[in-house]
Length: 175
Image (cartoon, rainbow, N blue to C red; front, side, top):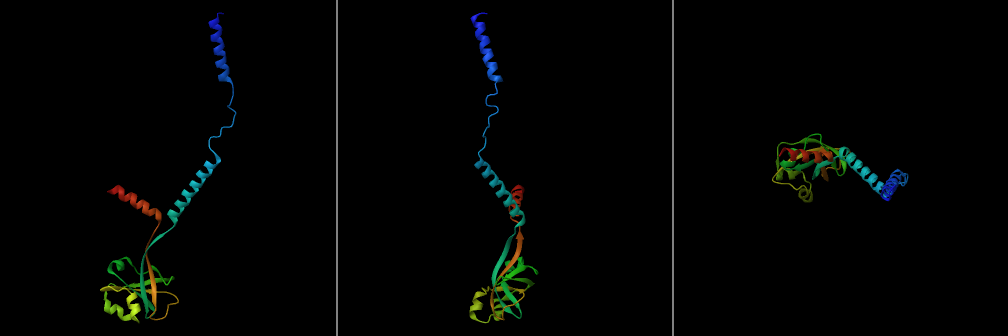
C-alpha cells in the first residue's frame, strides 16, 4: 500500500471511530434552568386565574345619588338619562344595606315639587335637584327614620370582564 492509501485509510478509520463513539450522548443536557420553569408555571397559573376571573367576576354599572326616607320608602331623584337605565327590581344599596327599586316614575317633578319632601335646607341641597327630576322609590329592611338623608347606589347592569374584550373584538370586526 502506498503512503497516500494508508493516510486515506487512516483518516477514514478515525472518522468512523469518531462517528461511532458514544461520547457525550449519555451525558445530561441542561436545556432549561429550574428558575425558568418556575417563571413559566407562574405565568400559566396567572393566565388561568385571569381567565377564571374574566368569566366568573362581575363588573357593575351603578348610579350613585342621595335620597331621603319619605312615607316608609327611600326616594331618590334622577335625571331623565339615569331614569332610563333604572328598572323596577334593580338591586341597590342604601347606606350600604341591600334595597330594591320598587317604582320608577315616568313623570318628572319640578325641583320645587321634588324638594318639598326635604326636611331641611341641607337635605334639599344634598338631593342635587335639577329643573326636572324623576322619583325612584326603593324599599329595604330596617328602613332609616323618616326624613333621613341616605346614600343610594343603584346597580343597573352587571357584565363579566371577558365581555368587554369580546365586545371590542366584535366591534372592530364589524367596522
